[in-house]
Image 1: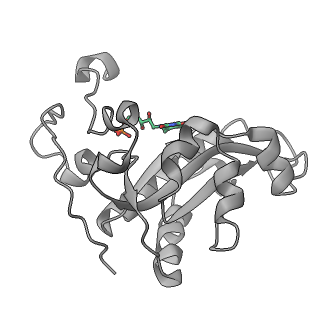
Image 2: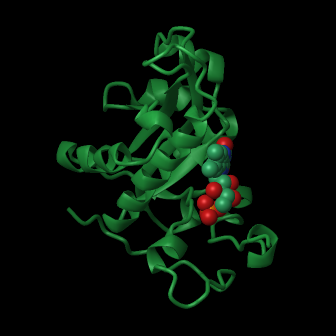
Length: 194
Ligand SMILES: Cc1cc2nc3c(=O)[nH]c(=O)nc-3n(C[C@H](O)[C@H](O)[C@H](O)COP(=O)(O)O)c2cc1C
């Protein structure tokens, strides 16, 4: 299903080269969400997209733990306060976890977090196609998340995330509302080195 995408963000800071897929540039990380249920089939679509990300040795070391109606408040309280201040109206909250070693030989997987980032981006672009937005969060209580999810030593909590339907920022505290717009990027020649 296509979720309502009614906001009109100011994209003036985003000067993408012509020909780049608009999906790339229209993805940004809002903090103002309007509480909207995401049905089970659509949640499955989001994490199905992540499933197709490439990974070292095809190990697919990522796992996405996602809140339910019952666990949403627990997940919210596992965020640092600065993120709790805006994430409460997201539809779901989640944590990206990786398996730290390869299943096929037990050796450390130095690329697990890289691969999880690719899976996260696949999920994020799928969300955008469905009218949803995501917001990644390093600001989580990592140790408490690991213990809440009862992770063993072979698994690591990498990041948190919110998924939801964006709205205008008038419900946000002023300092957070001021940041609520698509951000610019470094010039291309700083990242494309020759
Ligand atoms: C790994 C990661 C961690 C992040 N942590 C936070 C966070 O804790 N709180 C927050 O408000 N935004 C967080 N962000 C959002 C970034 O600040 C944002 O992606 C960046 O400024 C680029 O803006 P854009 O996503 O709107 O294009 C995080 C993003 C990523 C990818």
